Amino acid sequence: MKANKKWNSNEAGELFAVILKLKTNDECRRFFRDLCTPEEIVAMADRWQAAKMLAREVDYRDIAGRLGMSTTTVARVAHWLHNGMGGYRLVLSRLGLK
Image (cartoon, rainbow, N blue to C red; front, side):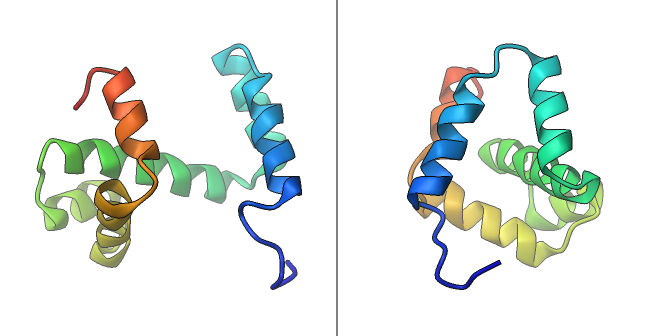
């Protein structure tokens, strides 16, 4: 990956637009499996689970133990949950989880 590529580049914006074209869970599953490695999908799924647990105020060490991730990763998710662009909070709210 080139160091000068940014997450908010035109190419990333195109990816986000493409994701919005997906209509079903199965379409998402198939697209993300083609796009990502299984490990990348698991990592993203675990971060989402961590965000949900953090929203319920579960202890960092409990989250790390349940998900098999480091407390550093849990802290990183917590940082973005509380200080990010509001993406986690938006989805949590839409799902009635916060």
